[in-house]
Image (tube, rainbow, N blue to C red):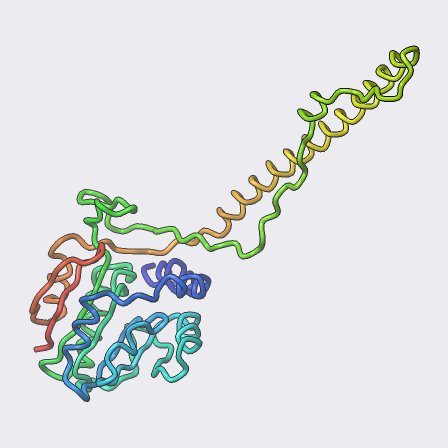
Length: 284
């Protein structure tokens, strides 16, 4: 059941939202950048769940290989830089040899596995690819996000479905009909050149004509209003149809350290950044 949940609410969704998601992922996080820049020149590492590859070019003095389960995100990464060393791979079945790499990062990925056993297995699997003493930096969404717009906080359910609304790229039509009823109401007939004996009939005919114009304007305004209401209703319906839901396990304080230790690692340090808990763990 857990793998089916991941297929439906993680793998399938990220391929559907890949382009839009990639557009929002361009600024590296400071602690990840710091970790990569701390690596020794010539070090070789892996980025498990690299997304659009935003961390692959941070430090030109190291060699970083990226992988992601989403072929859509890997395609986005290729579009950004076709020199990236990236490929599609399942994070629980990486093709790399064990005991190979100096370091690894996995940013906002582990929380997508739908059970604790699978999250620990994912961390353990990444660690197995490192040489003894190799370091792993892992980030996961925090339960404690009280100051963010999401509003998650301690005491809430930790396994959640998080909505992602795809942008509608089609141009929205705007009603262009403008009413001039008020203008008509304030108009007065121009009686210049009209003999006094004919003015009463002229004014009567003028009023009849203006009444017809007002009725036509009212019909046009009603039609425009109806069109706007229909478009708003359609937009609301489209938004519901374009909302995709991603599975997340929201980590409580200290839980990520526990999972890393359960995976056999030594926790070197941990902390909080941008609604995420992070841990630097070392393979023993």
